[in-house]
Length: 125
Image (cartoon, rainbow, N blue to C red; front, side, top):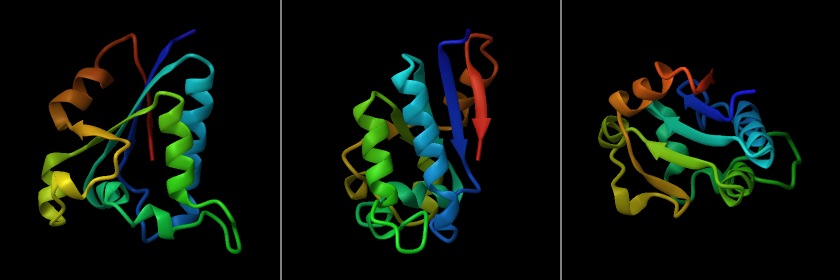
């Protein structure tokens, strides 16, 4: 069984909060299985890493657990979050604006090195 998972969030955006919970829930499940997990945030999905954004989003109407709570669960299990530097710039987000769970910025080359490595499985949202 593979023990490394890389995930790309591109279409999972704050505009569609009902779709935002699953990637973090699945990342947390994988991490709980001792799988190394990295999530790359590109395009508008990078705004989920901005302080205050995910805290106001809920995956279901009337839900009591925010998207940020799901992100925190995943991070506590060791999931690493990486922001696309170009996406941050494009959306006017500085590194100082990011949630503490973000491990830093990493671009296309970092993500592609994971995708092309046979030791990593890939999911995209």
